Amino acid sequence: MSTEATHRRDDLIDSLRAVALAGVIIMNMMTFSGLAYLTPEMREEALGSVDQLAWVVVQILVDDKALAAFSFMFGFSFSVILGKAVSSGDASARFFRRLVVLFMIGLFNALFLFWADILMSYAVLGLILPFAARLPSGVIAGLALALILAAPMTLALGGYEVPTPVPRGHTESLDAFASPEVTDTVKQNWHMIFAASETSDSTFVLRFMTLMGLFLLGLAAGKSGVLMALAGRRDYLLRLGLIFALVGFTMNLLLRYAVEPEGFWIMLKLEGPVMSLGYLMLIAAALAGPSVGWLRRLLAPLGRMTLTGYLTTALSGQALFYGWGLGLIGQLGTLGVLAFAAGLYAMLIAFAHLWLSCFPFGPWEWLWRRLTSLLPEPRIRRGLAH
Image 1: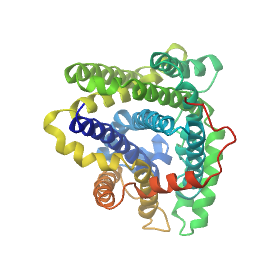
Image 2: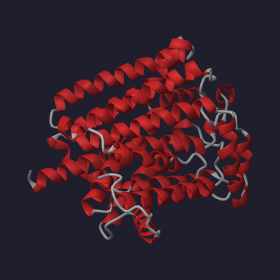
Image 3: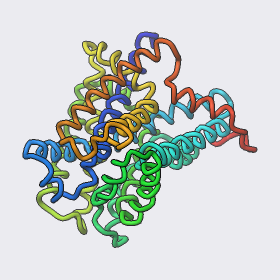
Image 4: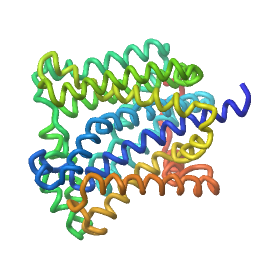
C-alpha cells in the first residue's frame, strides 16, 4: 500500500473520531447549560416552542448516539494502542500504566470539571481489551454483540425500573453550579457522582454493558480492519449505514411516542447503539470519498487530540455557564446552546491545527504519555496482549 493511501486511511479514522466528539460536545453542553437537569414539565415552561422542538430533535438524533459512537471509536483507538504496545515488546506493562493514568485524568475531570466523566469508565473497561485481543476478531465481535443485546434483557429480567436520563430532576445543581465559588462546583460534582448513581441503577446497568460491548466491537473493527475495508466499498457502506440509522430512528420514535419500555419493548433501548453504528458507517462512507480530502484534512487534527478536545469542552462549559465564569446557567435555550457548541467545535478544530503544527501530540495526550512513562512498571512485564 502506498504512503498516500495509508495517510488517507489514517485521516479517515481521525476524522471519524472528530465527528464523534462533536456529538459528545453537544450533549455535554446541554448539561452544562442546565437544560438537562430540568424535568420535561419544567423544560416546557422554560423554553419557547422552537427551543422545545430543537430539544426533542437533539434527543432523538444525538443523545445516546453520541456516547455510543465515541465509545466505539475509543475501543477502535485502543486496538491501535495495543498493536503498538505489542510491537514494542512491552504490551502488558505500558498498556496497564496508560489505563491507570487515564483513570486518574478521568477522576480529575469528574471532581473539578464535569461530574459525568466517561474516562474512568473507559479506563476500567479497557482492562478487558488485552485479554480480548487474544481472540479472533469474529469471536470478539460476537461477544460484543452479545453484551449489547444482553443490556436491555438484563433490565427486563432483573426487574429494574425504566431507565431515565441521569441529570433529570437534579435541579439543585442549577443553584450549586451558579455559585461563584469554585469549591461549590467541586462539592456539587462530588454529590452528583454519587447521588445520580443512587437513583439510576437501571441507567448505569444499561450504559455499562452497552459501552463494554461497543468497546469490544471497536476493538474487533480495529483488529480486523473491517471498517477500512468497508470504506473501500462506499456504496455498500452507505446502504448498510442507512439501514442501521433508519432502524434505530424508528426504534427511537416507537420508544418515545408509541410504547412503554417494558417487557419485550425494553429491547427498543438498543436504538442508541444501532443508530450510532449507522451514523459511523454513513459518515465513514462520506469521508472516504475522493472529493472530500479537504474535509478529512480539516477534521483529522482534532481527531488526533480528542482527549484534549473532551477536557477542553468541560472547562469551556464551566467558563460560560457556571457562576465563577459568565454565569449563564439556566439562561440559554436549546438553539443558544447549540450555537455555542458549534462555535466551540470550530475553535477546537482551529486550535488542533495550530497546536499540531508545532507539537506532535495534543497537550493532554502529551501529559497522558508523560505520566504513563513515570509510573512504576507492574511486576508482570510480558504477555497480556501477545
